[in-house]
Length: 113
Length: 115
Image (cartoon, rainbow over all chains, first blue to last red; front, side):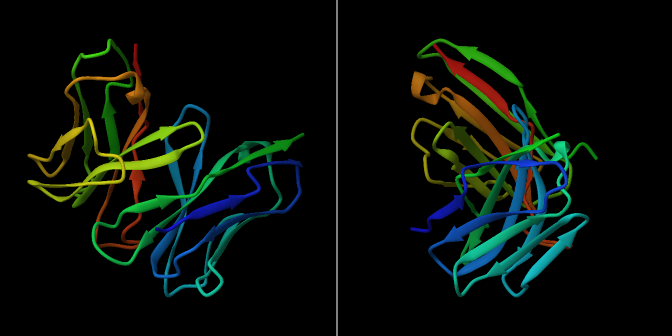
């Protein structure tokens, strides 16, 4: 069974700092990987999707990388802002039917003034 | 485009009562999903559908039923609610064409409390 782990579980940084969130998975037979953010009491907002044939994706201050051989993905946030405070989740779709997501445990990020 | 919408947003039930959660999407997506989110457990898949008229079990299907009579709607039913079903329920959908395909879009959630 695919296991997805995100470390650290919580992170607090000062505004302006660059930071990296980590996502590890045990089964390299993935179809793609998606990063989400979730604000308290809200739904999930898709940030980036990396297909298995890709190594990275970028959107604004966000960059996500994927290394299937080592079972890792990272989400890099440049010049962090208080508005980036949220829980960040990575989720995998394994090869096979249904396009079902397996979610990581999440990293709760707080960016302080 | 409203994206993915869920009805209701909040609900309180007594043990043994039944209810139906409605999910609607206007993106012409083939695939739809129901997840529940619990503290310390993360998001877990309840049921999903790969097309109109088809449904399949996910990781935690017990106590729930689903139906996909129309492509744009996916219903989640609780026939006899139990306190263990207190959770936040999310619906999601994804298509198989366009770029980036397979990207899942989520609704705002339904917060359900079973007393």
